[in-house]
Length: 389
Image 1 (cartoon, rainbow, N blue to C red):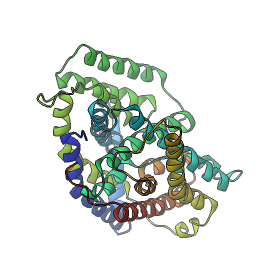
Image 2: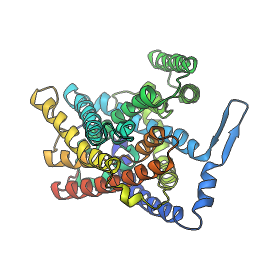
Image 3: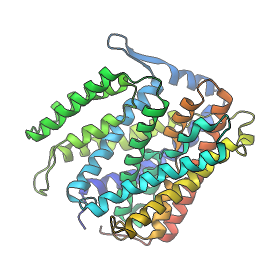
């Protein structure tokens, strides 16, 4: 099987970073519910930057929109590499994550709507649609060589498509105003990036400079700026040669350590900062809580596997190499880790209703932990030891 050396290195390093991520989640929850919680939240809300170019944002925004764009850049580079010469190089393999992601968005939204149609919570239908790519990849990486790399690549591609879908949902249904000038400027920069690729420009600095402009324009357009990382990744030139290191491979190598051991842990510390309040536990049995939990835990599992099954039966797609349906069930569970994007959509859904936001956050946290636990256990007991892939 053709697999990139960098992809293996990425997930091998992520085994340790995955443990770091879990520890950061625990530490963040402990801080948030201690006497230091208020000070920590004030730190995250501290505005830094410059007003000269309208770049003054809270630290939490710099983490979620800035640092995570770099994470998306790395994963986008890995996905492009696999499309060119790896697991996703055939249409049947490349199409499966797309079908799975569509099912993984539609079914959870339907389940949430069934619970909440006609209630004050119905606007939150987008909450269980999202998969948290950072946490889901961290959990699967902790299983190491027990899981075939094809399954890891499938989850990464599925999560990318899922997050792009969530970004579109936010842009269309949850954004008050799209700034079209900035959006068209983003399109222009994207075209320039791919023109650089077309004319075989290999100096990474030109792509990075344009990538910064792309992030800036997208952020000011009202669309979640992490998509800039994916667009930049797909413009970076690569090759199918095993003898010459391409710009894509160089950038992968440079990003692996800071992403695994700095960006992801900082992301976990900032985004698990949830303070438990009265009524949160009771909120789990409300239609809001049930819609979120059932949407993420069951909806993702059913949607991903149902649409994957249909795509394979119709001979449009094929199962990832050396994988089984039991492993696909495990992946479907891991995709139920909604977390950051789900919390973000819940804030947009209930802008002025703090108590409902808190109930939604707690339901997302519970659903994400359930999904992570179930996915990890199912993948662990259903997978034999893989080596030499």
